[in-house]
Length: 438
Image: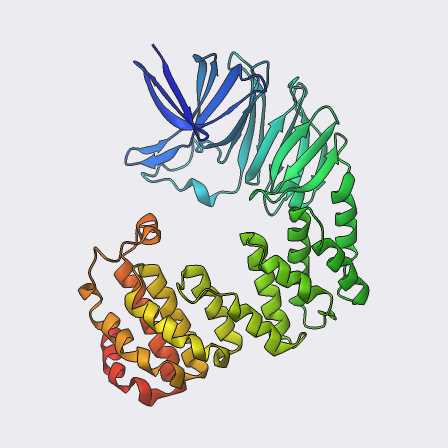
């Protein structure tokens, strides 16, 4: 007897011969389910992942695949799989702990409802996503850097029908609209459709216009107006691409960008709460300030006002660190809040980021952070005295690091920054640092 449970994109399969847990996708009519689980390293060597095809809860076949990362299934039970690594070279010297992640490459597989291989093609680049038409005649696969290409392949012949080299077309989710004969590339974080192509590989719709406009952007006044228009798009994926282009332009010292039309739009995007867009808008506004391309005090005041000082979490502290790198003076009124976070935050990583802010401010204005020096020294000297049960941090737990070491290193960084600006303020810590560096 087979027991199948699906919840939140995950599937559990239990039978006398199988215990399986992984992700899954179904076909349009939910007749077939394709499930997959990743491979992993073990003390005995590499253990392949697994792909399973089910029909109405019955297992039709299972197949070992090194690292299946995405699986789709058609209404006739054809399965497409992307495998993140090649199988190990049989002539290579065996190792007890293989490192598959260091190799660029992947394999595209198409299997029929009986598990027979219809197509197998290897790429010398990491694969991002795949999809296949409902009749299983054409499939699509995208590759990551340095190739950044979306490929269409004839399944029966195994031939490439066309290829579009475009970073945005190759890094999103591939969605097929067979009724309209369109391929939509949806931005991975859910912002929208960043590229639309027809079945011949030609750009179509709004994304075609946006792509052509962005290609013509050079950094002059006309380019500013084009970017402003794209920043006002209702399609957040196009806004994302415009922000990335603007940030790239600002990295060039000779770029002539007029911020007058852009700053109000950037402020709206920053306040939208859409994390990916907000982060980019923050970077650009800060770059405007640093490059003296905007009303400086208004820009920095806006960025500081936007930060919730009642609870300085990691994101807020990271942004304060960035602001401090260009204008330490502007954080004068916030330093008591940062010090309080350093002393009493219930999260190790928030204390760590607070130490980084203090170090960054201390490089330019050591007088603003002198009250933090005793706490910094205490953490460097006796981090173990802080109660473990108070400072549970999921980030440290996930990465498998010692949070005390994290905090200690951040405090050493802060003391060095303050000491470089005013050695007298950290004279008490000098001997301690010398002892640690021996």
